[in-house]
Length: 559
Image (tube, rainbow, N blue to C red; front, side, top):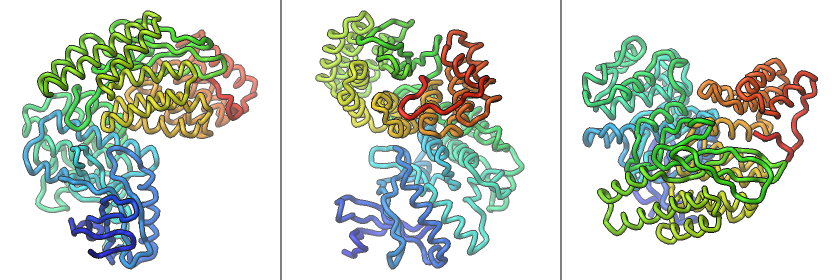
């Protein structure tokens, strides 16, 4: 078996724009990987090789469930190569060729790709070559984006050598055709891919590359309803939005992911969970399927206080004075959701498995009812009973974690939230909730950098609530990234203009940047929405007085 460094080559599995791709075994870590050997054309120029190294380093930092992982780049090998996650396939191109997608399946794939794009775009990385060939399924049926950043390096090198354009013509955006590629172009390409999954044909057909690019730049796509009449109007409308000629008129990747999540509506084979959450009255956010909600935390006490809210269940955890009065998410299941989940389980699962899952859900619901009634010990006992029936019961794990957090048992809380992540590797909404709650542990420990990382990962999975913007924005301020915080919070204000806390934290970020005029505008808006928000009033007085020093490390303002 041929060896390259500490890798043993197993077989050639393909050839692409970069060069040959081999399945190999990493003999140090004893895992199978894909080795992408760069073609001589792409590595003959030292500047091109340096570009690949930069892009590989950037891609290696993109840790996301829907992005193929880059393990290493070996530029000094006789034939430079990239070691990355080995995916079983098929590619999305092969899947499209195999037969039509159900509408829900196509939406789920597009949703997960959009989440991956949003994650990368927030880190300043655009793909620039989204197409079915660069989207692959793993052995579990999870879609993954391939060659993030590496596609850009490949195309830049080809441009230097041959004068070709930056992108695959059939999936280029109008602005990329004009030589202005960027993140919005990835969204346009996603729209083309979604159209193709639904229609099994391209939105802009043509006999050659020039004809296709002319059509993309000048023509409307072939109406989706004409080629796939069963596609709902709201799905067709979203496809049209993704394919807007003007990049400023397209939703960004995060908004696209949220809209696609809302359209899926039910668990899919690839990713299950609740999607499309919108703020409920009073600022809580309720999930249509799992009952996940976000609630505010009052300060200073040692017990767990509960209160009901319409058809959802709410836990308010009480924390010592001086800690963050920060919303956390608490998972519960309404009675109607239990019935729906039980019905689906009976239809899709074996009887024994369905009964165990249904029993765990029932115990979790009883625990939530006990918690809301102030019977914390009974609630804890019922949650543990639920976990003995189903160790993956996410509501029970999260709720026990929140109870431990309220009691300042931080190690126990973190282990429970980590258990959610282990048991639910592909369920975006559930993972986002666990990451959000784990960030609360980090804030309590004053580990602000780690909290920021968790909240960024949570936002990538689910950015459909005001809390997602508020909490991530607040974390950015605490990590001295106030400019990014202000940009994010103002985007949140556009989506959730009735949330006083978004305005207040935007005012705080503006103060950090020394922009007093902008800070006062946001703080005034916060006080119009909530005249009782004392911190907004205090920040406003500081702005008027010109006393705007940043908060001392470890002594953050409340969010």
